[in-house]
Figure 1 (tube, rainbow, N blue to C red):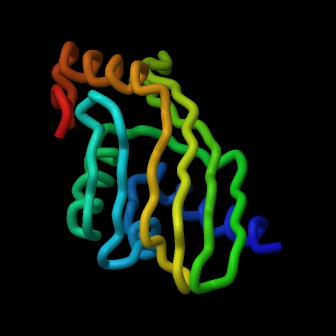
Figure 2: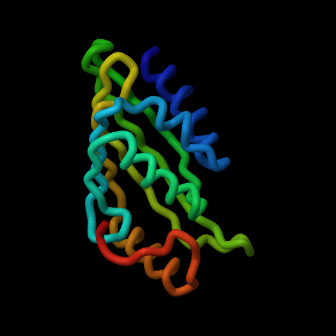
Length: 147
């Protein structure tokens, strides 16, 4: 039951993110949230705090990456829940060509409905290829190297 509810809430927030509104997703985060996205791409980061995470999410929206949660598992008591999300994300060109496609797993810890910490696992080579495409085409949000 907890996993079903978590998937409903997360799917709704991701739908808003795909439409360009990251705020519902950010509201689920604790003020001192910790987020880690490993790798050598410009997306790689270790964030502490909601303000830093907001900037990261703003870039996500600016570029237009579309993210979906295929499966959500949540377990544990409300003061110490574990949440795991497996899904896909992609980016298409204005002509409809797939520029970027990846699978991800997010593993996190929640307390009283607020995400305290989480980490993303993706194919980091695909993420680096996205960086190269954005820079090559001079698209908004293009960056190089680790942030």
